[in-house]
Length: 276
Ligand SMILES: CC(C)(COP(=O)(O)OP(=O)(O)OC[C@H]1O[C@@H](n2cnc3c(N)ncnc32)[C@H](O)[C@@H]1OP(=O)(O)O)[C@@H](O)C(=O)NCCC(=O)NCCS
Image 1 (cartoon, rainbow, N blue to C red):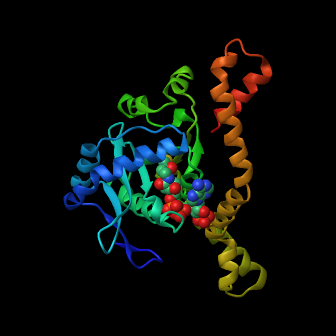
Image 2: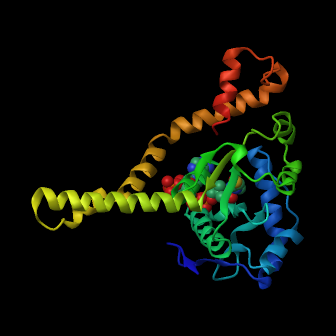
């Protein structure tokens, strides 16, 4: 159970006792998507309730029982992939770190339930990209996601489904982000190796035991922080990039910008889009 800075909000794994929140949650998902004017895969209250029963959802509520937020887990491609989907926060509680707390809890839950799976998400939301990046997700091309048709069928109810299909499922308005546990383990091993080397060189140079602050500076932890800062520094640029991508993708059908016969400059754009 996670407590936020607002002590009245509790973030926890949902259970069958939370099923009565199902309709409120799906209604909010739909009206929020309409308000944003963006696409979203529609979910039924029954589907959300099933996730609660299975223990594959995280819910935030107040101590008075008011619904605050929600997110759930789906496994794809024979459990090789896991998606954390349907993140939604009650508009009355936005801007207080609820989404962040829910995403962190659902990420932990995914790692507990599917320790070997790659965790991914598709989103147009900058807040989600920010949180994902903090959790260690990286932007990837769609080809690195699951090829499970059932997952992609979920996009059929999205207003941008035609765009996705016109790009042969290789690109769309959403940015794909992925957490690969194997890659992360490798990174961790490299960090440890670096730390070891740093410790050895410090010993050789000074003949003394390494100072704790020097060790901190030489560890991957520091490197990780730098990475997170870099993303934050570039956030405005990334935001502009997403607007540009949206502009070209939605305009693409009208202008016939779709690879094959497109001029070289336009092809270059599509090469860049595939990086996201
Ligand atoms: C997106 C949403 C989940 C964010 O919920 P929230 O509880 O207000 O988010 P948090 O307060 O935890 O904010 C997390 C981070 O995102 C940032 N953020 C929040 N909303 C943002 C926005 N609209 N644009 C850019 N950044 C945003 C916050 O500043 C914070 O960053 P920080 O840690 O650097 O300060 C909520 O607005 C929502 O439910 N929207 C409608 C549904 C939706 O878009 N879901 C995502 C589908 S993928």
